[in-house]
Image (cartoon, rainbow, N blue to C red; front, side, top):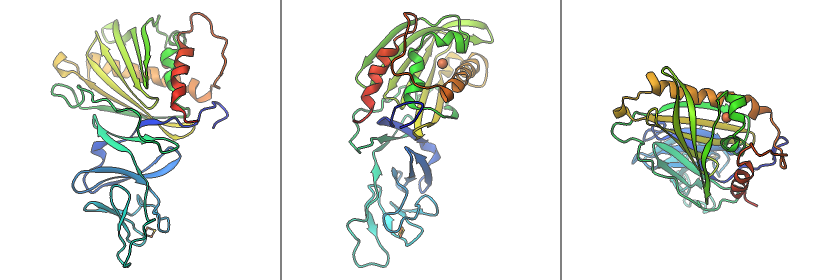
Length: 311
Ligand code: FES
Ligand SMILES: [Fe+2]
């Protein structure tokens, strides 16, 4: 819990790395959800995310440990663990203690992202991560990646999608009419028509945002150029987010992240996000705000977001 907002960490799927950051045999020490973790890829190509501290005498497996074949070997006394977290070898013992287990986090690789399911009570995943047809498809550019740290929580970031009035005051957009704002279980879909700043002047385009829980969303741009942005909001601590943006553009439509309209859209989206940061990092959550009729569907959004906290 935090003094600026009353939310614990939400459960859901969260990006902890890109798949290509983890070659076969590689390890990656991670800090997320207020914990130390280690991501690894075995020689056969399977990825896993495990608690970082060895159950034996507590060494950090991501600091000096190594992948050997299908196992992860601890740097301290050489115990080896498989991807499910079971100890499969103690080099100097006749018998492996059955309690020698590491927690293996539910993890999957999809759309080039390594995702982890976090739940404070360790319940199983309750929804799936969508397979995005654009990601890695012929004609779509490799991800242009951006990464930022923001001192806030997941719910506060996504609330801005519903906060119609802030677009004018923070982002200086003329108006952001929302055509659709709908919720379906863990999914939230918002469609907007917006005005983007491009080298060709201001142009109107469609933006469709779909969030899958509070940790991962996609934003599709149409009208100006065909583009998909993945947004991943991963808590490091209760009040610290690791934010990753991954942009892919339809090169067949002539778009490129390096020039022209494609580059301008990416710059504009990032600038809009950066413009929100000083607000997010200093604001205090008002549980019962005196909203006015022009404020947008903030109460509906909050009702949807409430489902991601374990009670
Ligand atoms: S602490 Fe890991 S093997 Fe002893
Ligand atoms: Fe904003």
